Picture (cartoon, rainbow, N blue to C red):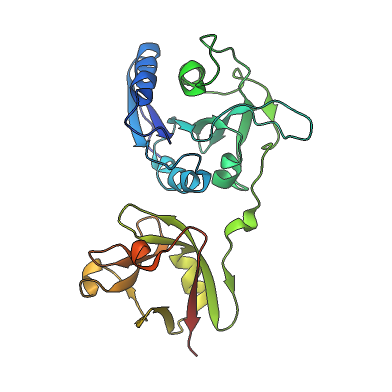
Length: 273
């Protein structure tokens, strides 16, 4: 069970960067509206509009916070009504495991929550200003204040039975047969470490105690390293990340740069008898 909090924690996950005033002005609005608030920067360095990277970060960072935490997620975030032939993408609040996510129904929520049990409502509130291009400043802080005061989402807007925009769950699915697992790259961190879409327990289930091999140029990886120091400098290795995913790395180097790895690339893991 998650620890309950006395101070209101609000996190920010955005693609704003740090060179503009956006982070500062949104924090100022939040501090002006809420008492006893702690604002946490998850990251502001997501590449512009990159929902896949955002979903990975939200699942592996935001979900670690205590019950009652409110998360503002502002990536590729703009509202869109029902136009001819175009799906609506409303601003929404998602309640999941007693945490709250204020975001846009742009496909990201479906990527983050999948088939998990959630409560969803659209945001049927007026902006605080007459400007409509920066909801994270003009609307989301007001929503955060209301959630913080009421600990519910019923008063925010209208209940929704599902997300308007759903990203197919098959977008990043590993494929396997008797002799091989074809994994996919789902995330690359600033060190060039490459995360695969297979968690350690899934890998062990598929592996069935068999030997395995990953071919990296002239190198072969045949075991899971517990530490980066298990191999020599400049050598590749397979390890388990703190988030539980298989991770390919290069000791004191960038695995992704060395091999020009990108999100969506396949990685073949071959099994022995």
